[in-house]
Length: 186
Image (tube, rainbow, N blue to C red):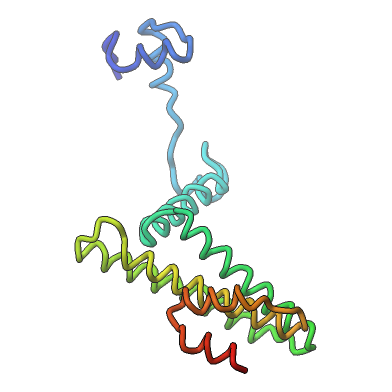
């Protein structure tokens, strides 16, 4: 393969402090790795299986981030709340001696399916032309409220005191102000 001197590669060579002579480029381009997929999957080729799995994992993760509308502080808060809800649920079940792997796996499935609502809300924002992701953010706030209430319930099952102002704020965030007032009267 012939490379013209000064064609896209010489700035790259200057950055890497390589000699910009033509022989170096020809040597580099003639020694490109052999990309035989069968050998790579067996771990025999230039690229190992872990490299392919890393690329596939990166592709999957970037596709998921695109589908949920990006990683912002609100989405990070939702993932933290979902994780804390699962952990406190397992701890509460362990405390009450009701720990079950079947219920735990079902809880993980439900937690992962809540992100489907975020994908739907984000796609509705795209279709409706909402540039500020109103529906996605509203769905994320609803999930934070729901998960927060569940975290407080799990802590209550373990006998920990639950602050009333946090309970009230979470019910308001979820959009269920009547239930928050009803719980305060109890």
